[in-house]
Length: 273
Image (cartoon, rainbow, N blue to C red):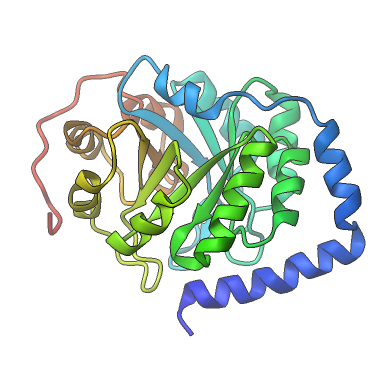
């Protein structure tokens, strides 16, 4: 069992416990009464700089352990919004990433017009309804971890609830599964979730297989303005960055750098691109 399989096995147990506490019918009714979500994809496409920045509230990771154990998610979100991030991603997995759904909920209450992505391991419609109740404008769906029929079901429910679905891919096989949903938002993850290795060349290699009409996000391994410039040259619409932001000595300055609010140097590949 690789790390992703382990995470999803734990997530199934976690969702079962939550369903026992708050039945599906109740959380579905709450979702239907929730205020309309901000336009996540529109915020990326309307951003003044390209690629737009999705700044992530990420406190820990399975591969690196604690990243920002004393960070305040609300203050991070405020810093992100005030320094050029187009949208904010909130990791809500507690066991592996030290996140919590309450982090998303609290940020949504404080900043109701800020489009928020719930970054978690979605495998059950229940999670979509609770995401909408908590204030998510978008959710992550990992193509490699979901049977195609379930991926399509979850994608459809997300749109019914007025949320975008960031369909994440890491291979040509994932792209074929993603395209079966007719998605308007695809994320290319430069991190291989089976071993957590990272290569920005993944975006370069997979991007030609995706229509330019799809809003395309590059995820993982993005640390410098030079990385952003490289990805901008490929034509991505947005970049998703977490670790480089939460571990920066000056978070606000790092957000401005990666949001394109200062000049960038010509990219010189340092990885196996």
